[in-house]
Length: 265
Image (cartoon, rainbow, N blue to C red; front, top):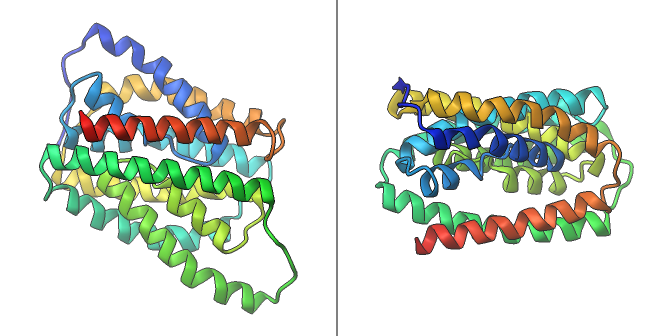
């Protein structure tokens, strides 16, 4: 169900929050949806299920605009994105169904546990970026045979997390892109393409059984759209192992911090 909640003055902070999250998320290849549910739950007292569905709607501009920006810069492999995305559709719809089975308290604690795991994976991923990914020539058929099974597995996992928690499912998507040895330059843009597909699918599932607060969506997306445009432009001027690596590390620690609060809160 789609509805508009009454305006509150505290909502005026949402565009600024959306801008910061949209900018950082588009720089690292995530949808930024991780931050929306805990912020809505902890700061704005939004029920967990509504926060999850609303987060998906607010994440769409980040994914779409961010992916388009990376595509223009030549930082997106759309063929790989399709492989991940097709599997992600099934995962997102399944995840949305799972959310309906959980109580708000269970969903909040599960989100906290996921967040801590996500933060650890992001730190490990940052180490892989700094070390680099071994390359090498391979035939077209070998590349296809390697990418479809792994892409389907990681794509489904990313979609399921998107549907359950209302987040971007960044960790399994990026882990999968590393697993198929996609060049680092293409990971952020391709990840955003996959996350966009997952987010649309998850939102469709939640619209069928959940609630979306359009008042919160409008305020958040007013900032996320601008932030998503800014992120790829900043990324184009920095090296993957330089400031971008530091941004990922800080992002990971913040994710872990939020996870602990969600578990204990």
